[in-house]
Length: 504
Image (cartoon, rainbow, N blue to C red):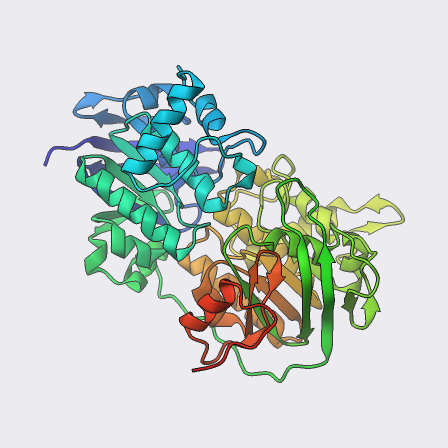
């Protein structure tokens, strides 16, 4: 079959790193082609060149045999290339139709656009009301907005970057049905994901990048996830392990924690109670948008709690902010790494200073010790294999997965007594995910108490001692993970609040 997209010897270098080194690949019409690689392998740079966001230093691209060199995304879209980014670019206060109109060069009247949105959403099984306010949508529904925005342009090539990272299993299946329908109609799809079992279920072929170079190709359905992961990293993967430890005294306790939403589109927390013991990992699952961000903010101190609801080692900390809680040993890493967990325009050294000043002794009498902060940042980079030219580089210059490794490493290396993390392995490759999980297991084995909030149920079952589910701001009763079935987990995620879910 003739190629729809052909890349020949594409090369792109930045100071200190060659992001893509003579990369070549071909994608046929209707093909679902996976682009695999560990964090920093060059995947994002490659798709940015295809989409006109980055200009290659060398090499050439062709679409349908004709030269293709987009100078901006508008030119790429005109040539039939659409892209759904990992991080959504939507305005919460505007409607679905208004958001889609903002992304179009020649948007029709809102009434006509709303009709087209309904037609496309019905055709591809992506239910979406054009008049709904985006701030009221779930993460999965927001992704539909981005996909429909692309489909309205009738692309011949659709690029998808980590599309299932915020979706429920049911939403993933809806997305896959949509992509298979597009494929059957002749649309080619370039699909980036670290979820290798999903790659095996969906994709026809895969190209593997390592350190900016193509190191292999495979047919995913004929290749195991482990084999693909080991091709990506170039070594045998280790499985996270943990020596059994007896839980110690209670470190953190919540007693009917109830808080109003701090934003117009957030959720209130409703009577959340739990006890977290030394050496224990509590996994908290749930569909995105059910109070995960609000719970982390309440635990980290970004949102204050009334007296009597939140205790650390017996001390009421509800009225304390993030820095006093850090001094006492409670650290947190939020889900949104750009702008929340890290300041994108600041260097890694400066970002290390932001949360590590007190516990790492980086400031004395109001004076900041930047040499010590740089040393701390370099320790994080070394310990968590963060791919970056150096600690002076801006956080925003790192790939998403490498920034995630830096954020988690920054908190783990501060030796917390209680650590709360939200989506710790979001968007990171199999090797890095295993390393982060092992770091959390080691932390608990060393006596820390850990809360892992995650939508990756396999991750929670692998590392957590107990599991609880958030639903509409309520927390189910924590259950031991040993012997817990997916049916029981489904009941808890669906709203089995405040009661035991019987083991069967």
